[in-house]
Image 1 (cartoon, rainbow, N blue to C red):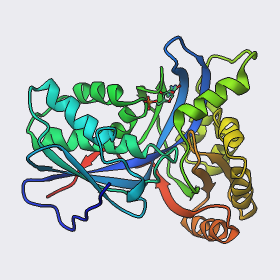
Image 2: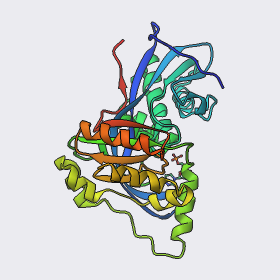
Image 3: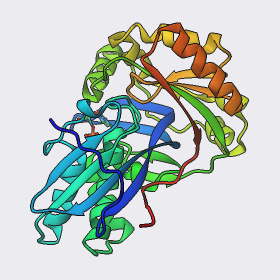
Image 4: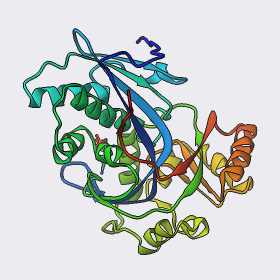
Amino acid sequence: MSTAAVSTTAPGSVTVRVPAKVNVQLAVGAARADGFHDLANVFLAVSLHDEVTATPAAELRVTCEGPDADQVPLDRTNLAARAAELLAARHGLEPAVHLHIAKRIPVAGGMAGGSADGAGALLACDTLWGLDSSREELLDICAELGSDVPFSLVGEAALGTGRGEHLTPVGAGTFHWVFAVAEGGLSTPAVFREFDRLTAGTDVPVPQADPALLAALRSGDADALAAALSNDLQAAALSLRPELAATLDAGLGAGALAALVSGSGPTTAFLVHDPEAALKVAAALEASGTCRTTRTASSPSPGATVLPR
Ligand code: C5P
């Protein structure tokens, strides 16, 4: 693994900014025949971003900078590399591109950081190669890359059904968040397997979006949203990482309106009233010693966006 820093965007390169997400509702159904789970997944994009820069190169290459860059795979398992390969293959091109990821989103944290880089690389390569693909074509490739990747492309707030890839936009007012980044990541498949283990022998309901949650999201009323937040993967994430309970308690003790595991974790999310409260809760979380670091953010945030050169 290697890292490289790019301080300015080189001529002939394209940079795309792409947001992290938090799931304000994650309702999980029983495992399907294909191993995936049907979801009612209310995604909310937050103002925590990675940037992916695509530059013409002799061959496909991925580099990464940022505090957790050493945890990012730089081989073909990186969704950014897979995105370039899939797009190139569809157009009979060679994926001759250098993809540089400026990483701010926690790695393997349940905030769709890898998915963000996939969507970012796809849009950056499409722009660099002048392909002008339709949104439908891009969304199709995103769904092939992973269940959360379509949302990284569209951003804002949306209900994801199926395995999360079928998106319907939903309205969202402004909300403020603190994220506590845990030591180490959690594997999404492992968390879903733990969900299956914990729910074995029970009647898992068909996942459905909660109307009260959608109304709270639309209204911008943080107290109403706090009362409606839910994540069916939380018990599984806590079963694999029991120490996350202390992080949730620390944030609530510091005055957060609500606390939940973000997606499959182990990042935990704290809803607060305003940016001042976010700074206070973040400082208390850092002082508690129950997390590695924190980030503050607001929502919603736009999806993958080409930055002006
Ligand atoms: O779609 P993606 O490759 O991101 O999913 C990673 C893993 O998470 C899947 O292989 C599966 O184990 C699990 N998953 C699931 N149901 C979903 C989405 C993901 O079981 N709806």
